[in-house]
Length: 117
Image 1 (cartoon, rainbow, N blue to C red):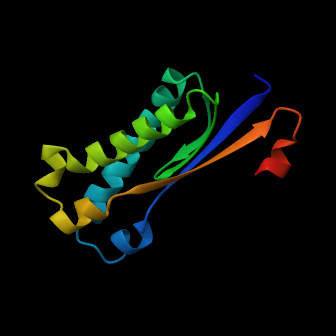
Image 2 (image 1 turned 120 degrees about the horizontal axis):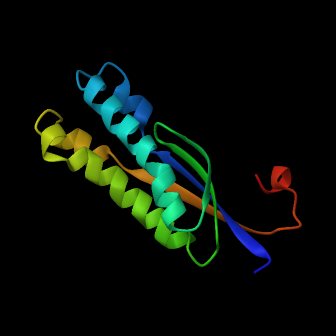
């Protein structure tokens, strides 16, 4: 295909979750674990990670795999916050607020990446 997908993901309301939270260390650990898993998940979907840090993801993924990749990343993000070792120390409200949003841009490979972004 002459098209690709640019996948952008960002954790929701993390500033609010992290500010003055007694759970700051646990939340930071979840985010660190997530960012370490991103590249493997993206590669499983034939993609390339451009950036993965904390709750942010930027990746190039084939158009026929990008939805599955986004779902896998979302599932991993939420699973890390629901891990029994972590969830015992994080409130239910924080766990339910641990969501991540995605944007997918489809583009022709001739379009400059700087314009696509």
